[in-house]
Length: 432
Ligand SMILES: [Mn+2]
Image (cartoon, rainbow, N blue to C red; front, top):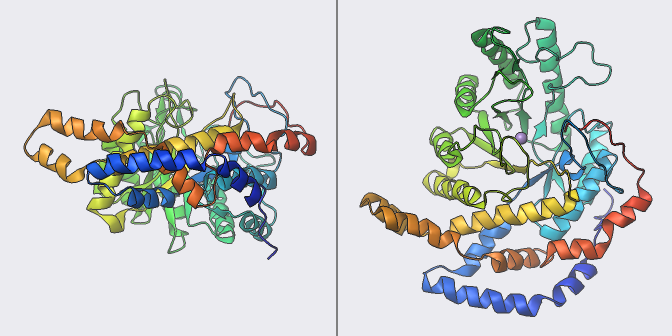
């Protein structure tokens, strides 16, 4: 294997940090005193923050779009290898995004071994592979226009199953340990399909994928309320998802995408429920204002993100052996440089996690037991109100990252350089 390649040199990051380390230490020591008075050892929290791992979606480093349009920027990646480079830039600056989640067939992978080696050279590894039967791939024999794993035609179902099995094979070569299955199957008109029959066909197809899972793999079922089907969706909610996962077996778990719920649904409660039944498989982090907007994590409702992590931290404490959710950022960056959005989102997600770590769990549990409603609420609020930025920055710096990743990224001039080196991308179809 060839040598490790740092796209952003350690010297550059060291120079960036040298200008900021004195004020960071000052802020960190001040926060140390604040937390010490609450009985919290800041260094232990910092160490846990440094261990958070978020997978980057390979498609997230390209400029996204809506179904109306996509507005490309100069220098965005044009191939899977260039996507890996941009993921490596994110990782080198923030140090909590060490893996990439590929999407097939979007990431046309000719030689999986070479791609794995390239990722390793860049300091990355591969997380869950995502299958795609929600659109037709060029040259594909049969169409998914009327569904894939739940299609009425057994030949279409067989083709969709075969694609998922291929994803598992490629994933094995890449070093992945999970496949995420999201289907767009559903209907747009009442009466269009048998609601019961479509679910039966899905379960039968999913069982064939499950049967092909290597022993140390997981199958993550991602539900979504609507879109592209607007009347009914086969795996529409966490209820359908957990029923399917329970029927398939212990290696099947549910994946919660924060945008895939009805408005104002209590997502943190779903987290607690799924974990209670051993089915909390993973997360797709993003934020939304109206629907599945795929906005940047914590940009609209950072409090909800905190409440989700509050449940995750509690779940980990309750049953640590059962707790290994796969975390991934799943956003569409339509009007920002995707690298900047990913850096900002990683910070928001880790910040929500750290605030959840600051919750006084013993006090909370006592206030809950004695029905002291106001103090139970204040226990959460007290943790949420802490500015944890110094903890995140110290964790990053100790791991070799930048104290201020966004500023450092802008200083690198990476995108402008890529605009000179990479070929332009097309405006193309908007949907991602
Ligand atoms: Mn998702």
